[in-house]
Image (tube, rainbow, N blue to C red; front, side):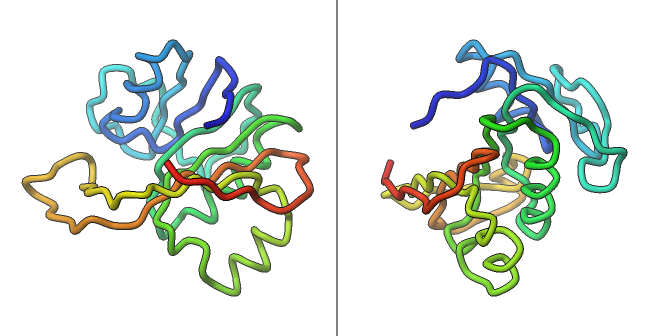
Length: 156
């Protein structure tokens, strides 16, 4: 898909599902969340949206709570340097909405959208027994700080 920096911050790590996969692939992952959910690789309890802003010299990759996704994206872009990326796993419907168009998409830093060609089933905190979910259309949205253009759309 895209080449990522060796250093990644996962600011909504939850149970560590995404962080663990990234570490398996050789990335140095800093894992934080508002709530410590017992993930063994957890680094810090941190309110990414309302906490004191931090700068990060790497890329940010996460699956944020959908209702806070815009806030996560804006804070992420404010936290990284030009050329670094913000990768968000989101419902495809994130593309909808006048407010998002005005506040996010008008910035023109959205560089790639990788749409899953097959619907996938997800569950809150990876708990498929407790949280039943229907298969949804999802995509990886990739912003690159400093990019100014239209996004490329591809399927995975």
